[in-house]
Amino acid sequence: MTFDANQSAIFAVSALTSYYRSALAVGVLIVAAVAMVTAMLTVGRGIRPHHPEEEKYIVYESGSDPIGTFGQSNVRYYVFALLFVIFDIEAVFVFPWAVNVNGLGWFGLIAVGTFVLVLLLGLLYDWRKGLLKWA
Image 1 (cartoon, rainbow, N blue to C red):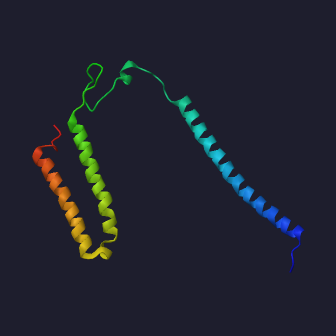
Image 2: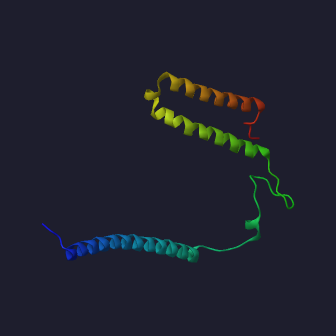
């Protein structure tokens, strides 16, 4: 079976046309998605109530009313946030170990045990210093 130049050109054009059809489908979907998001935001803006009041624009800082131009902020909130991040990251590091606990053997158990022990010592230190008391 032999192909002449005319048949190969037809094959190339049909392949190219298939490629452009796929690209056109993606483009249509992108345009439809942008149009739907724009329509939803526009309808939402028209439906929602809009009653600006002076009290709505006052800065509120974790239960403390702002004083003057600079709002006060208690350090205890930042300490709680940092402790949360530390113990949240602990879960991120322990999860891969839990997935492959059988493959790591004793070395993995000792490594994660040491990791958790160091974090527990930090938590004990924070507790003894009184950093975990909210009020």
